[in-house]
Length: 141
Image 1: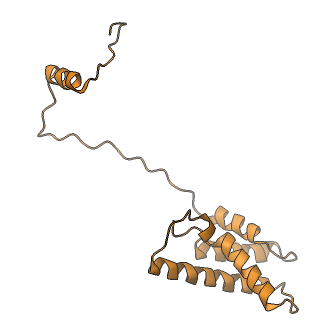
Image 2 (image 1 turned 90 degrees about the vertical axis):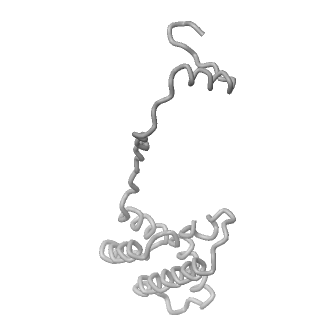
Image 3 (image 1 turned 60 degrees about the vertical axis):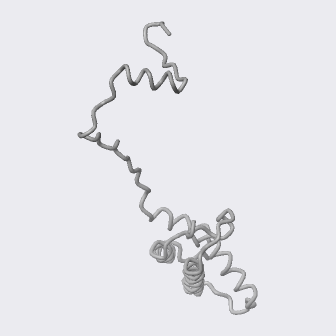
């Protein structure tokens, strides 16, 4: 949960170290975005507006690792030289650059070779004591 924006953490509280890392990451995003936007920057923007813009960018990009944000910014600067980027455009490019999650299949635990399988009559007694009646194949109960 620690890589989610604060608005998406669902009430989870971060520890002091994770909070510090989160704030450092948001600050890095602000600097990276400031660099990217400096190609399009307007000098007459007020400091409060600039801070609000940086906060928006950090909210959108907070869960993305720096490596992919950097790659997306470079790609955008190369491919879209005449348009000012939006946080969503960089987010989509960064997500596209990230590797797809891998599905991990856990194999069943190997059987203990020292342990002998349960005898059918013992298994039946255990089921009866637990009140479990297994269905039988062939239409019978």
